[in-house]
Image (cartoon, rainbow, N blue to C red; front, top):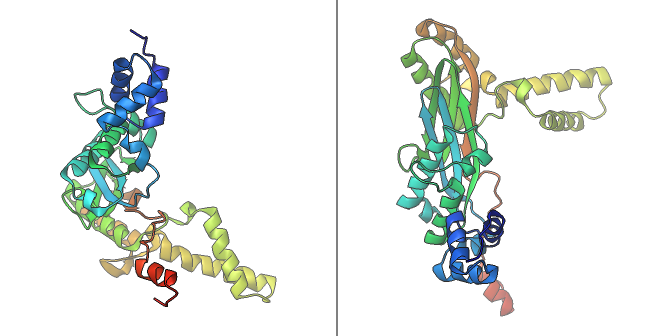
Length: 309
């Protein structure tokens, strides 16, 4: 019997996208013959994932999970919303998010983590799911927040079931104050984040390229103004921009007469201790993914016939 090495298993996995244990079994069954192992996996229907990897996956689910002072948020994509309603897919997303609580918040650590009571990794389980359901699926992104004291509030918008939906938010509040007060406040701020989609916590967190782009727009709008006037225009314009896009400066959606910073300050008297909004994460399903447009068959037929659609 041929000696099945880790390198052989790795090569077969990269070729077929099948699970590690399936690749090992295929090589064992075919006495280490790589081509025969590929055929073995194809016959078993376990190499389907490779054929589907090029398809655009922009549907799926966002999951949030929390445990004590730790919480994770995870986006897993599928090709269709139909799969997002599949019980098996939902169970995988929920379990993967729970596993992420013990990781370091990177996709690498999540993919390599194993399911409780098994040796199957999260990455391998997803490949098995692809082969079973017949659609491309991707682990797109994951994040983890932690606080030493306080709470991490979670919120899911357009939830299909508890903890799973189209928009997920984590909000970390650092405080030694009353947990009930902090939890209620955190959830309200999480709902605010879902609605307003801030780009950063405060001005210092805004990407420098974004600041430069906004500055360039202000310069173009006010071309011809003296330099000292232009500088004041840019400073004023950026200040207004930061009020619109940074969480702490935004008007609170539940009471627009106050900023989020003011709401936090007022909450301190109820909580009994200072409250700091440490961080937030917001995932909206499929954002930034270029979706394939459905073909316009009527226009295509009309064009071939020399007619106007």
